[in-house]
Image (cartoon, rainbow, N blue to C red; front, top):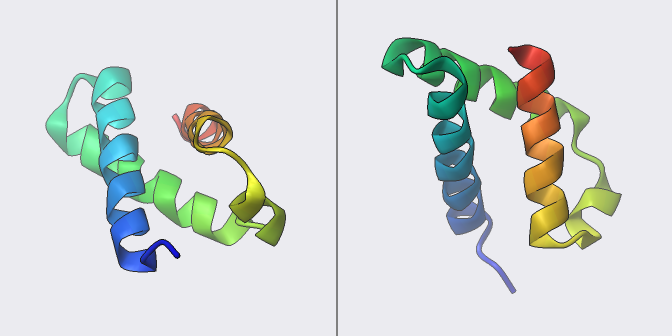
Length: 68
């Protein structure tokens, strides 16, 4: 079983990396990453837990694109 805290930290690092690519500015990247994580958490459905890592990354990327 995956530790939820470890999984959350891993996803946050991924989101922050994506955000830096989008914004090219550290402050904007932090804001975008935070916004993405909040939106993702609100939109999280139990069926997403069953998806592969690649599908999760793609979904987070779409959430970020819409936020940006």
